[in-house]
Image (cartoon, rainbow, N blue to C red; front, side, top):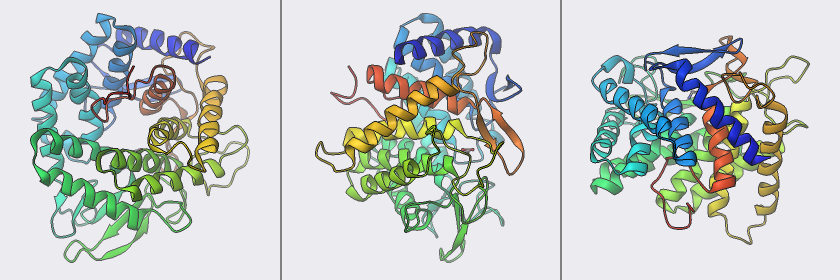
Amino acid sequence: MWQNAIEDAVAKTRNNIKRFGDLFPHVSQQGIYELNPNTDWTNGFWSGLLWLCYEYTGEPQFKEAADRTVAGMRRRMDVKEVLAHHDIGFLYSLSAKAAWILTGDEGTRELTIQAADKLMERWREQGQYLQAWGPVGDEQEGGRIIIDCLMNLPLLYWAAELTGDERYRHAAIQQADKSRRYLVRGDDSSYHTFFFNQETGEPIGGATHQGFTNGSTWTRGQAWGIYGFALSYRYTRDPLYLDTSKRLARFFIDHLPEDLVAYWDFNAPQQPGTPRDSSASAIAAAGLLELLLHLPADDSDRHELEQAVIRSLASLVERYSTMDDPDAEGLLNHGSYHVRGNLSLDDYMIWGDYFYLEALLRLERGIPGYWYERAAGDHE
Ligand code: GLY
């Protein structure tokens, strides 16, 4: 089953190179991807999909298309407005850093370090955190951290390793610690975002942006946390991060509906028509596979987590994938971008497609995506 699902995803991505040209897919409306000229936070996922397909097939057409996305990311580095958020990590890890990992091209290494520097411009020294959104010091947004940012930290850990400059690592660790302390709650659920006083750094409180209520658990945020803390563990070996990833994972799994694919928020009333977010489950699957690489063989939760990831990925393939529709643009049906904002419910999300293929390739081929350089044993 995994092999067929991978082949289907690769064939669709091949078709999409022709469909999309030099534009980037974001989310769909009624099955048609909205395209943009590399101006959104999601553009790295298309690049990452192309690199995954190249790594799996070795076909030059995937590399040529991926190289074009990296050239676009190089041009984007000079356009201030389209990098004014923390998602520089998503954008450049899966494009320029992927290129560096797969090709060793020095220019892409430099570009990735430039991206890490750009992310560091959002470091707030006073409060010791990375500001997620808005202009740095913005009155509304200046004090906000968000759980998604954990996935942007690998860019900083990686830059520290490559350059020997500890500033990047310090920022990443402070951000991970703050996220652990303030975004993760005592029952292992999570806030989407948390505010601090910009002047004093004092905590103010949790709030949501895309979840059901301020105190609810937005499923995609929980998934970003599972994967993000597992990656912070990989780079630091701090056991608290591994434990946090596991706690978030257990909460995620324990609150899934019968078909093991998440609704958009764990606290949203579940009734006919409640939107799913298949992309949250795809992220969680890839994140669980990363977590499992680090859990000791005799960990008491290991068996349950292994079963959960296989069964939920199987559900994605069998019930949510577009395998029965060869002309579909997307790989995964029933993603939700922003239910509160009424934006793209029950559609394709390019990050859902990326993490779906990453999870399948992790399972089938040991290809772990581009969050870190490959270590012996991670990659066959
Ligand atoms: N990082 C934004 C989102 O997950 O929608």
